[in-house]
Image (cartoon, rainbow, N blue to C red; front, side):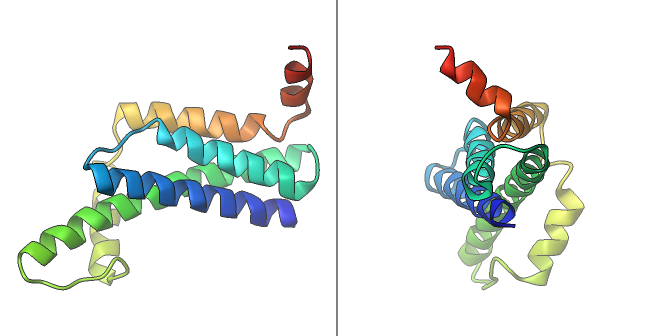
Length: 139
């Protein structure tokens, strides 16, 4: 259970970092999605107290959810900023923002994004595996 929680916390923290960097720089750096996966995998490994196939599934799931959360907050941040410039006050959690995100989610994900999402999931999957640690010990 702790592995699940720590994977969620890692992915959430990674998503927050990605969204903050994107909103601060007006540039969405897909490579930061890799961080989301690494933090989900690291959280699952640390919280789970070891390696196990279940932790791999959990961390991969949280890596995907973390990327979706980051994409949502980047989208919402841009939308809230645009609305503010027009004198309209909306929050990140406004139902209209959720609706617009859902309606446009496919337009928000490019082939480049899919590449980084795949890398994030692969990293999240690999970190809580025994092979990850066996390969590292050979170095």
